Length: 180
Length: 441
Image 1 (tube, rainbow over the protein chains, first blue to last red):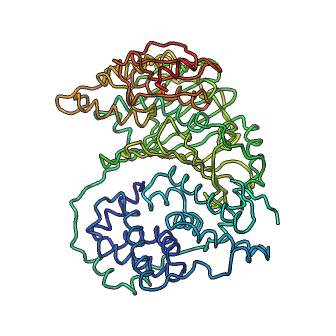
Image 2: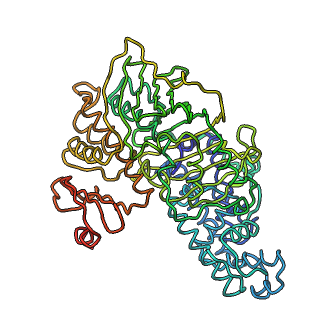
Image 3: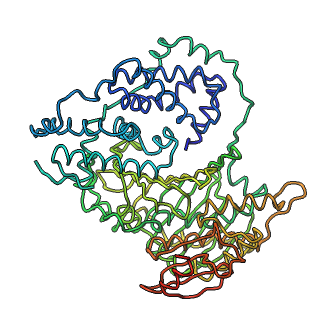
């Protein structure tokens, strides 16, 4: 849920206060880039998507129905922008590396990281988005809760399931056993 | 390669694989890229109606308006809340941290934190409580200074600005408490039941941190707090703050040099999302000098007794409290046994009954205030049952005083014996089989 100071910022932004809107952009830019990256598979494209989403939000600010749900509304816009960008081009793989088992066979720390990235890429989009929100820029549950419009407990449950899925992928395809 | 990895390992790998480091919004570049949008925003004629948001101070509220007595009653309980926020709301499902090696990318020796806290005999710290009431566009602030002494007890000073407006004394010996309210020139007395006495009198923070360590948590890394580069963990356990709010979360930040806490945050919402409660505990003064005089109740001669709220937190008073609540609400029990939920429920009922300070409205009577205090303390009793894993259940959302044979609340007394409180508040001790029949299982 949005905190009190944020509601005041949204209120002011809706009433035309540019500084308040800029502050909201600063707060949610990392989350938007994380969402964009989960969909587009590229950080620079994700930053473009986040900036475009903020511009769209700016244009549509008078359509915001519930100031408490500003972050969630912004995230929806960003997701749609990123999906539009995907439709206009072939989606790039999240990390262009070879087969997961080949990666892990080399057994180096960097390769293991690649294996984890590939396992993340195999997640369904909502789970991948959540993993990105959590680990991309170290967002708190509080902020993720605002962005996704769900409770922290729900986030915890979804995050756990996403990690279990990653663990299963790593075990199945890379023979790395992760006990959660 | 080690074939057996754990969740910490996966967290670390995910962090390495995905984290991009510092990601900053460049406002100037964005403005250059989208000048029309920025101009549109700046010169916007959009204006919503001025939903002015007033920040009222709860102490003005206490003394002047319709919730005067509810708030005053809350004052008594909040002192307990601060002490109990974590000590009564944990479970033992998640194993405690064993040592610092279980915390990824932090350097706090968590085992040492608990050890250090065991050595603390005296402590002074601050507590700030913020309550956002969304449906009324209002925020209420509370500001406390807590003095704790293993030898002398607890004193909690509540402030409005620089003025002390309430002082609560809970001595180390005995179970009576006194709260002095200088603006009213009155004081309140009561007793704390044996059931929750030890938790209330917990002087050091050892139990608090030990219990927190049992919770499900995630690492937050480090950040600078008042000049200290502290390391933190976030608690996301469903049991956290269970008697205060829903969806409770918390953060504990520790100075890795001293291995002592520098900041504790707890917050959560009411179930209907209309209120948000946040507690910030900080400004710790460890082993500060405190004397017996600091804990002796100072009641000036011209002060009078406002009320004695009786015993709080006992099983017997819990039943009385449920009865009292149903009387206040014309036959409805608390939907949930959390203080925030109860206050929301009561506010709606009392407003509908014309209780307040507006024209033609009346204030709460002392009897009504006592009922509110009792039901609040029952939340603490309930939380204790939860924390002790007494297989407790509460069905106030569907059971009414007319439901003579329906289970309103139950908890386990021993392995096969349960105490059951029925809708009409009579109690029976039954075995597990009979309980299953009663609950329709």
